[in-house]
Image (cartoon, rainbow, N blue to C red; front, side, top):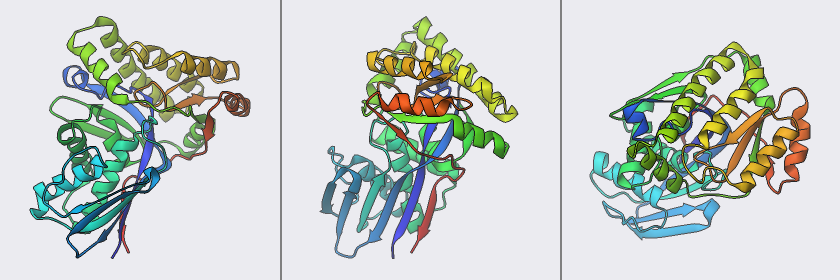
Length: 340
């Protein structure tokens, strides 16, 4: 028996950062994101020899340990260990023996929610294997708890819900971990136009998002007015983006992205840098009407909106900037699991 799962990575189109505590707890956050045809994969093969093997194929890392109820969180493939520990603690109450293999279509620190998406994929594989009675909200919330509470990893809430639900969603975040996922019913021609005009660019750099996110949280704790106001504006951008996409006002999308990026840079230091600014300026000169970093900032992927035929000049210009344009499509499918 082989159990498989996959969960899609995402791009944040507006509101990114407002899903991070304590801002979301105090003021309420809102984000508009969309999932891509780039995935995190997990495969479980049960064993009977009392061992656990974790194989991160994309990272060329393998860990083999004795099957126990709690695995040490020692810095080696902690995401898989964290999921296993919570599954045993909350559900099966006994050690399991298995091999789990994982793969992610984007590198860590890319800004596409790869770590959280991998947690969702691993969790989904266990849910499929053990037939656990968990719905979409349950899986997303449990993935969040594993990352933020069990593993003490800084971050927001959107990635787990995007990976689980899939599609284009307007998400609301409130105190006490309350999350509302609003799937958007968008006409297919508007989605095709959005997909056609959005360019996904990998800067060939990664970053440690936790440092930026922690500084963002510290700014809210310290009641830093400029940072909080920037987050208020970002939340407003998510509403404007939702309306533009639903109404098919595609010409507005670039400006909303641009305005959001200007505000995002005010949330915390390190979100942008000289290299990112140079790429952004070059993109505008090539015909993009707006863009932003995907994720916390500091590196990883950037997205740009280039209407009409400017997309092709933009791709050519970005190719001169030392990174690479990634082909993708938008997907409506979230976490998917199956057994062979």
